[in-house]
Amino acid sequence: MSWLPPDTEEPYEEYDDVDYRARPNPKANRPRSKQRPAHDDAVVARVTTVDRGRYTVLVDEGEDAERTVTATRARELRKQSIVTGDRVDLVGDVTGDEGSLARIVRVHERRTLLRRSADDTDAVERIIVANADQLLIVVAAADPAPRPRLVDRYLVAAFDAGITPLLVITKVDLADPSAFLAHFTGLDLQVVTSTPEHPPVAALLERLRGRTTVAVGHSGVGKSTLVNALVPGADRAVGVVNAVTGRGRHTSSSTVSLRLPEGGWIIDTPGVRSFGLGHVDPENILRAFGDLADVAAACPRGCTHLPDAPDCELVERAARGELGELGPQRLDSLQRLLTTLRSPRGRGTADSLGE
Image (cartoon, rainbow, N blue to C red; front, side, top):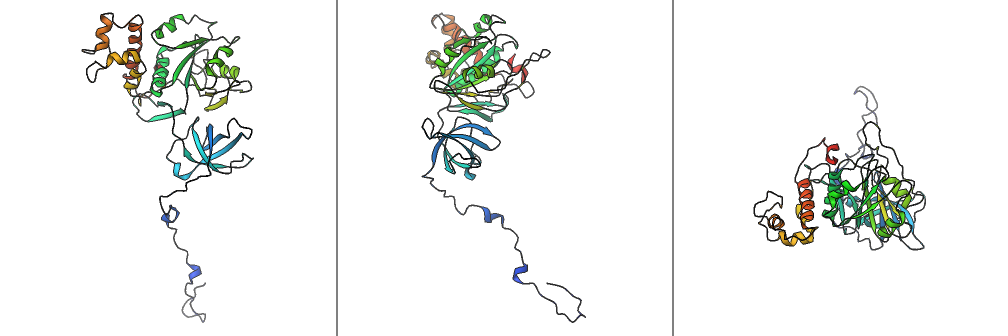
């Protein structure tokens, strides 16, 4: 095609159909209907690691053909969170061969969800792990000093998720944890102590066998060291505590599922200095104290169950000594957790949450 002035002998050539390029239609790439394939040939897998839009999943778990597959999410799941511990359906190349890529097309219903928010004023939840049975809370007796309020937050998250908490106190060779443990006397909480030279591997494996356990802890408390002792060859990075600030350095940067030698899984998470609870329903905390929940059923509607709550059945029975031997201590634990939950804090106070 060319263009020449009118006084030239060569005639003007008009546009031909092949010279015309239509503007792309943005609707042309949209699905033509909302119907999706049934994916009847999908295989079930466990999500073990999430890393920047790629998911490491385990197919045929426990069988001779067990294999690790790399997957991405299907387009229709772009608004669906997929986290470590999820059970999902896969299609595509599920061989696990190098360079292969499967596609996650469904997420199974979750039994439990361990969640946290950015801070206590943020109701937007962030799912940490799905389908966990236990929460392994790792705290150091010293270096860094234990933070009862941060442990309270872990306990609130566990009770809200409906999973069983288990407390491990590390570095007991440096300090006596008795004063710290006194904060939790009223709770039915299993406690295991540990030293760097003698980690309680046998005692913990007995409690973790056959279960999915997620490990959480403040940076520098020895969580990754403990995980390495439980899972030989895990090689989770470990760090030291800053001598000036008394804080640990983040060494685990991702949430990873590791198979335990005697069965079960332990999920190691990055160390945190704060644990927001803006998404938690206080009623979930009360339900975790079954004996007290039965008494609280007689409380007025909207009762906070705190010491200054008017006509609170729990407070009045405690004053009369009618809650049993451990009743007052359990009520104190419940009230402390509820106070933690009802004390909103804004952003920028991450370190103070654990004091």
